[in-house]
Length: 148
Image (cartoon, rainbow, N blue to C red; front, side, top):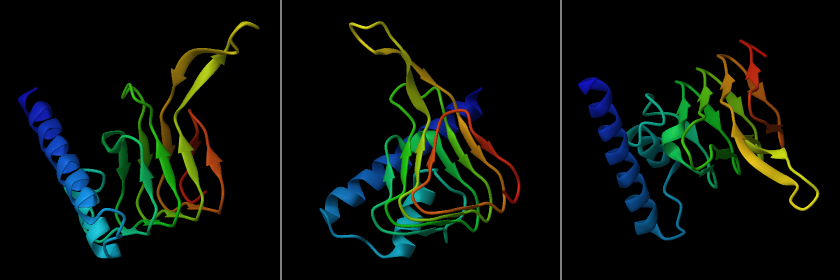
């Protein structure tokens, strides 16, 4: 149990470092290598050499894990919700093309006076060796198999 708490604390420290670094640059984009290193510090990946292009958005970085040897292209968004009960897991050697969105949360269909009902969330899993094309939206509960 202590190990889990320590891991969460280290991940939180990494996220704080990442947010501080990005605030320091104020709209300037650090080189690809530094963006990958920031993701490593934040606990998003275990690979220091991940290829992370500009304009990648993490709604809550603690809910995202990216494997080794991945390419995350421009304008990719990771939306895990604010409650932290869903995660996005990207396997090793995955290529994600421009404009792709990963969305783990949604709403039930409500009554006519308010169509957005209770919030629901499920994790997304992308296994090893997958290539995801441009402008794809991957919704809650999806699992993409090995080499898919």
